[in-house]
Length: 208
Image (cartoon, rainbow, N blue to C red; front, side):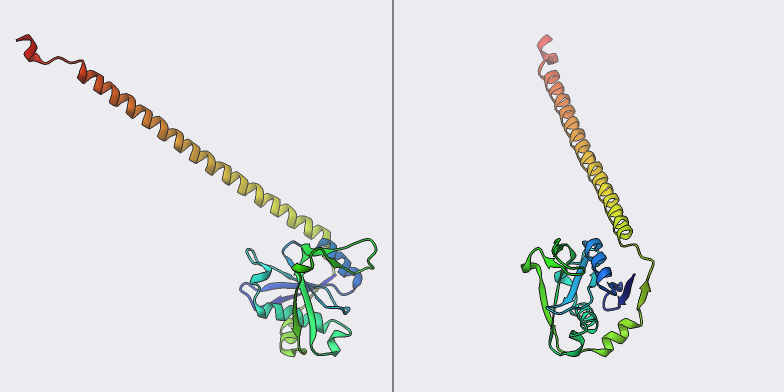
């Protein structure tokens, strides 16, 4: 199962979700989406929180309010982190997560440390947590793998449609060029024909 929240600090509202234990976190690590940004308390155990980016959005364009929402959730759902102030939060794109065979369940590393961003949370913000908790939904029927496969199918269909549109556009442009060439060739032939006729004609005064 997964716990879902909705942040109203964007338009439309943004989906935030997290696992309830290390086994669920393991599934999220494996079946997250490329559009997901992963949040965790640095160097302490905590929930794995994911922010689902909007179309066209990047990790660098996330508002500070959205980042704060996710940071407050991971701090509040860290046994140690929730008790102390000035906690450091790390976040990165899901695709930057790395799982190796020697890691325990729920543990994860990074492919590139340079792609990991950090921020600090001074203390718990109950206003943020209360707002998010009002949107809380526990989804105990979710199939992580199926949801990811559906997403990938939609993306492949979208890509094929974009390729089809691109090919049609290229064909239309090519046909337009060919028509322009044909029209230019016809105009030249017609112009040359008129010139030849004029040059081979006779003036009536020659027969007077």
